[in-house]
Length: 350
Image (cartoon, rainbow, N blue to C red; front, top):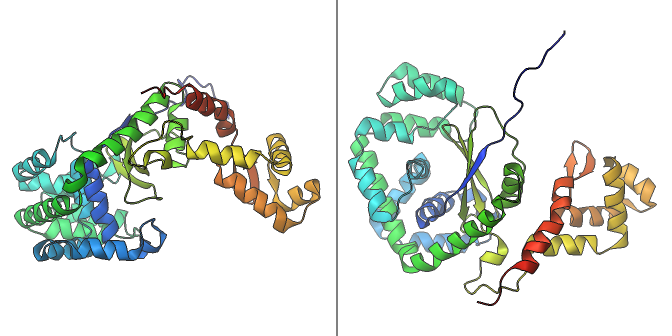
């Protein structure tokens, strides 16, 4: 086939950062109701049980309903509607939403091709609901969630969300609201300071720890920092937007930030590269990708020892696996000098 390419080329996405204790509350509810993930979170299971026990009985009832029907998803999607300055503004918005609009905001975005079905489903159209259910049949919780949102009385859903969110926020966010807002904002400011120096893809990778290549249907990436779901990054979809709730960087978690504290990833990278063997591995991978066996031969090293070195390099995000081979994350390596310069040039006089 002969092809004359007259297209503009692949465009990137725009990155927006937004922090708010409101997101922290919704993600806290999500984490508290997700028993399976508790062993992987920084906070132990006992912490989450204590948070649930601290809630008033009526709020606990709503939390268990949220666990059964996954309505924490509704809260997150409603928070995407606009930037809300505080809890009262968000609850006022929720109280004023017409029933059909509330359902529409609650139903998950499943791609442009199903936006008509999503709208019709919000009006009670059973065929449209069936189409959405079929489209996400393999998803972990979407089918049950869509069925519930489509069937529950809109006023009952509204009452449930308001009682749950107000109760959780009052107990677990309000007492530390000022400090939490400052912490989340500090992390956003750190990312914004690098926004003019990194490509959108590099910024997303730095914040989330994972790559996200541009998609034709996605014009914007929304980055939202969180503390409760650490170390996980949660990915979600909205119209024309990919959402990443990413963990606040380690250096921004302390109540009193030490201006001389280097970024955690910079420390990891320096440690990983501060060894002759690991530098040799990086050099080999700069030439081409290698399997474990190929590296063991070229390094004349036992696989168990080699695996230890590779693990350190992976933890520092300097290398990655592609199928069965290790390859260098060249973009991240090239950015180390930038991160070091940012740290050295940071004003510590205040």
